[in-house]
Length: 368
Image (cartoon, rainbow, N blue to C red; front, side, top):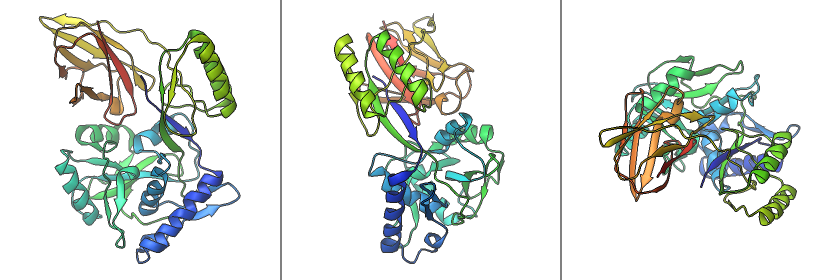
């Protein structure tokens, strides 16, 4: 069973609803918070929201979560950027980078670091807006309940070193993509907003897809490649009711099975990949993970022997932070170098799904 992330443009009725609801909440609950007097306007001509600062984005995500949607995390926004889905001429800020409890924004840093340490997260922290909340009346920025999207420690360092052009490396700073397309983390004003700010695409985690025939896969690929956007790998995103009806009819004829969870999306196809060989040393098997698009290639292991998981040079970003949940126990490690390993116990025959710590990249360990 697989899980995927779907991205769509912000616009139309949804943008208007988000704008109206954020304005309503701001006036009701945060009347004396100056950040909500900053630029935030509905663009009726283009059907979007102009303006962007930390608190407006946090509030927008609070509204979006009620619809099982969110604005992209820093990693997700970078993926969209690399696929050419972000235009220049506007700025977008997907979150906050926390280096330490010093200025700028020492008050914000102190709160976030306290909660991060309680959860076992290490500095620096790349904190997306979807993982933040606001204290009513004061507008104080606080952690949300779910922090799985927060990058920390070596994983955060790796993301920042690879992708961020300029950063002050002190205090708590806004992470943003500038109007020229460059990525910076040196803006100490969390409140600043102007008409050039934009919310990026909205994301939803929505699809599970089980076995289907080659014929169905080929058909879905053909339709999706000609009509729809798709991200994170060659995953096929279906979002049209007519196509859903066609899929259901075809699945009924050929014997596929689809399970859909979420909203505004109706199916997905995963292309098969060859499994890399497993090597053994003594009683410990070595399984080397490789990356395929924005997911892991399937890997194989032998039942009854402990496993040492490593990652080759093709694996990058958050996919180097590997997470297994096996029989109620979590096994995770950030595999910074090819020599580092995540140790798993001997497993019985079966398929063991795993993911990166962000829940963006997925793979399967097939034990025979």
